[in-house]
Image 1 (tube, helix red, strand yellow):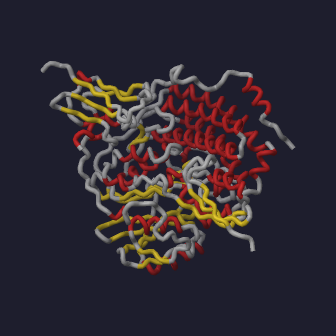
Image 2 (tube, chains in turn brown, blue, orange):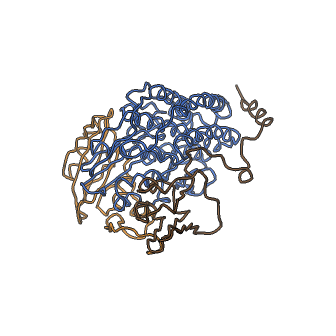
Image 3 (cartoon, chains in turn green, brown, purple):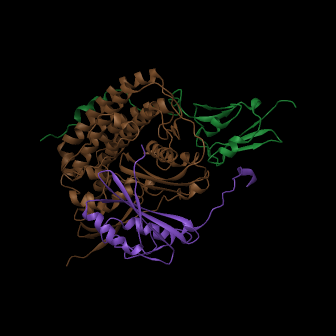
Length: 116
Length: 359
Length: 127
């Protein structure tokens, strides 16, 4: 007959520090190789459109005439496909997550400033 | 003659981790029959194969389910590699094996926590999930994601793991083992828990084999089916034996999962010791043509990925038979003759993963 | 080291007899898979396994062919056959637990029987 096996562990956890993290007051823990969100170095982009064609979620919109690159943050699943197919390697994966928001479509647009 | 009532159980229920619907036919608190009904998360992912090229379809396959994501990706890559005759390098095989075993550990800790929660033992549920956090941290550090790892690709793995990450893993594995041992001893030895699990949800060995049970549901009744013995990935170089119990009830299935937890950490240690140096991928040229069914051992049982290719960039058919799909007829058999209050514990001990079943 | 997975083509009416043979020899049922080969031609593959040996039976049918069910021999196959019947529209008769077309809640009959176009999906703004 063995009851109350959990008692020892319960008392130990009561008297020690909490195991949870007060997010968002404290920042979320992350590692070097965490896949957080996709960032672009817009000055090096050549607007070939490879990332738009290969994206499995259709989240990227490339406009060659206006020289803009737009990504829908909540359609993107951070699969890293665009980072791998970019020919000039101007895309990279940051290890910070997108902040929560109350709007439906969060799109980030980047415009190239290079003079022609 | 006692009156029969039909009550619906699910798809939204506080106990269930996944949306499954059962119509229970009751005679005064005893369940006489059950009719399962699935299809609440059906996304038509098998039809999507006609719109995504075979190199990109791996992203869709990984996201069928959050708990068994790594092994789905591994099985898809294996099916295409066998059709095209690609030889995967040794180091990639060992990394894939390591990822599979981490995935199995976190999945078993999840369902053991849910079984404890289903009985009302919330303290044990939190303790088991605290142990699971350590496993998820290790997966995030080496593969990049806690739940969706995104590591497997056709021809190998995407990223290599450095030597110092592997050394840190060995130290952490001891801590993980200690925490798991503390929690699972309570699960198996406490009398209050045993009263809820023993002699509940019994299925005999013959019934389990002929109704098509797989995974811990079958191994808890003494049926020896473990796809890892076939020797895919790096399992032909690892020493292990399937965990078998003969009870056939919920306690036996829980004991099988606890045994597999410690077996998984042992396999990870063997992988780290035996991992060779070398490249992590081979280049893929051309299109697949032919058919093959790749079978792997997921945490819940045997999964079959059948691929049929016709020489173009798009596959003509891809079919996934997940373990829960095969475990639903044994579940109906287990529910016959039990009390109404035992129904949640029986369903959780079968470990339903409905988002895999409804791809 | 590709594993051997033999496939035998049989007639639909021989299906319960062959399944009974497999059951007597100790095989268990693994899966049933339907593929659309061309307009109104389907190919259904039944797979069996014993001691990790994988064998398949294959039948080629149209939507009008009457296919006898294997659920008299293997009792746990009702989910596979109901799903194939609902998604592709083939005619399987005599399933032991018959959902009569209500297993999935869908908008159209036989959704996997349609053809999708493989055109490129353009980005969100241009759609």
